[in-house]
Length: 299
Image (tube, rainbow, N blue to C red; front, side, top):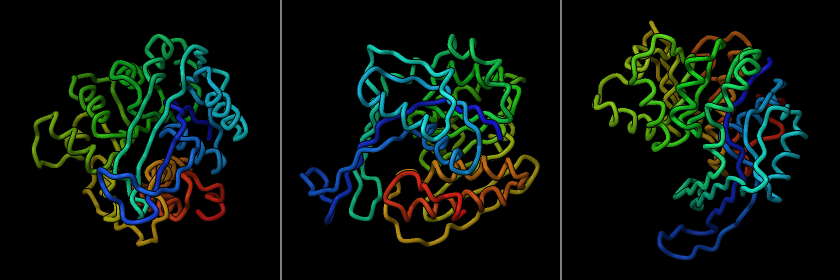
């Protein structure tokens, strides 16, 4: 399937404690540097699954940027529409994990995120719409998200990224606009809570509220507890996650998201899409890296 992917490409620095994690202390850790970013990781997984990706992103001008670009090209991504800002440093994401590979703290330094703006997207939208589906995340600004959702003529898949950034799509969906049609929204429990708090809706049925605001499919991930799956007009269903030994949680959500998109290309229904996403996530949890190069053979 031909896919347009819009979002950030990062350098990920991951520190995993080698013993019991002690907050506020220096922890002996294994530190690694890798390629990351929700959109980039999702695109990486989708390349491995056989899809053709045109990546709409922004690169800086440092050594990290050259490595990021070369990696994307080696995977077969089309970067002909990507931006380059030679004066800028690359996006960096720092994660600190405990000895079980669970995230204790994360820090995102994203100088290039706002460069993917409405002016750029307006120039590219006719090319973006030539794909069969569009994949993006809330690293985009609120204005850019609103533009994409109003102008997209193809199914849109969106990952909410973090609790803070999830509020961007919450504000977009809070505004009445008949043209906004979001095919699939994936969020975790913290991101869902941030949206509920901003909307002031308490503990009501959030997927149902999403459907009323134009979202067709909602996937609310709950880590080891599985995922709540909801399609407009259907009763929400909870699916359990497979119990697996966790090596590293980084990238599991991106693998789940890629699994949903891959399932869409296969014509799978909402529940089967979630099962494929859960399988991709469980495989990634067993890996020390955020993306498994053998994903296709195992999935």
